[in-house]
Each structure stands twice: as C-alpha cells, then as structure tokens.
Length: 64
Image (cartoon, rainbow, N blue to C red):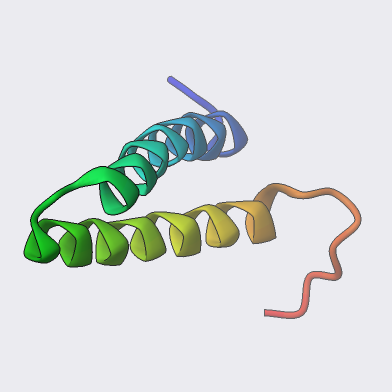
C-alpha cells in the first residue's frame, strides 16, 4: 500500500500526463468545441496539480 505522499505523487504524474495531452489538443484541434473542452480539461488538470503541490511541497506553512 502506498503512503499518502506516494499516492499524491502518483496522482500528480497522472494529472500531468492528462494535462499535457489536453494542452496539445487545445492548441491543435481544428474543432472549436474540442479546443474549448480541452481548455477546460487543461485548467482542471492544472488546478489539480496545484492542490497536490500544496499538500506535498516541503516548506509550506500548514494553515488549513
């Protein structure tokens, strides 16, 4: 079983992979609806990475 940190690191990797795919599609798709959907997925992925970073980066003040 993974530790909490290991699980978050694994999640960060998965999110980063999906975010990079969405970033490519939002720039290259010929379909405007697909570009808009990829843009939304990109921001969801980026925000998710920020959440993981907030919990795993050392040196952050724990104020929650």
